[in-house]
Length: 403
Image 1 (tube, one colour):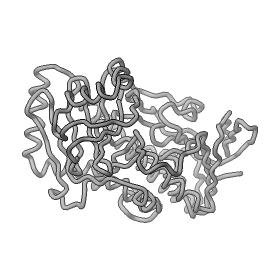
Image 2 (image 1 turned 60 degrees about the horizontal axis):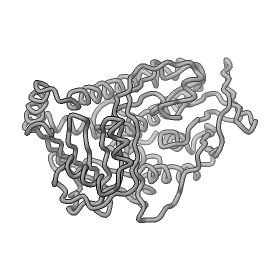
Image 3 (image 1 turned 135 degrees about the vertical axis):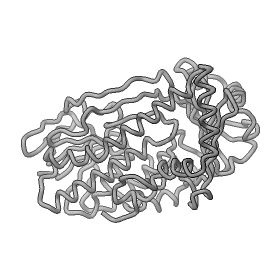
Image 4 (image 1 turned 90 degrees about the vertical axis):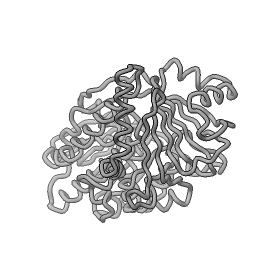
């Protein structure tokens, strides 16, 4: 075999998995088509950001990549305020209520990826093949063979699909999916406001979709504005002054005036779940296995938990001299992760349907629910601890333990 494991996709989840398998006896290859930036002007911010939970922070620290993220820039947040635009219901979360230093971090995606790639390069058993694409995949009883576009052939005992929501690996394996488009597009941008964000995540639910302001360094905010595809095109293409006026009207004056915006982008939203996470010699992680609505910012965190769980299962199987590409081994990972992923996907889908509408009875129900939850201290604290990854059936890395 050229490799023990070939990971198709060197994005945030694929790179996390490669680092989790670093400094082991396994030979790891990572195939990625795009060269990621490793440096950029300090005044430039990536329009794509992720909300990182405590469990994901622990996993990043466990693989030695967290320091690189902090060295670049991260924005811890200590508070979260969520309210409904159609009523008076709201809920607040505070780090002091659960005795934590913060509730999590908002980090630019390119910061996360650069730190992971920097760490990955330090492992002697991990090889990054970039830029290159896979042309074909053939699975045999005891191996899988990938042919690259440049003609090279690579064999491995296991192929990992970490290649996103439109996974080529998943398609080659014939794994079907269940899901639907949300008929919403997330408009994202970096915004300067006249008032500081106070290390708080703000989210306003409107009938057309949620609008979130996420704290960044230098007092800036990253917005995620979910709205109809047609409206999203208008928001991305309109002049800056008009966009800021529209944003001001939608969000209000909680953060003062909307002063300026960086580049804007739009990303279609959908729910998609692979009906199986594995096949002989093949397994899926991250968005290749599941894609969810971003209203709670949990997508990347689920993917990192996938990577941490898969690494733990594979290393345990290898230590027992089991075949890491055998379906019985891979099913352990699937059973572990599928239940949690399905539960989170169902919850996010339910929230989306409950809040993204102008139905009067539902409006009354959700406003009452927000108010009741806000005054139910133990229940609220249990919710936030679960969302932070401080409870549940977590992989060792996510609990701050070594593999």
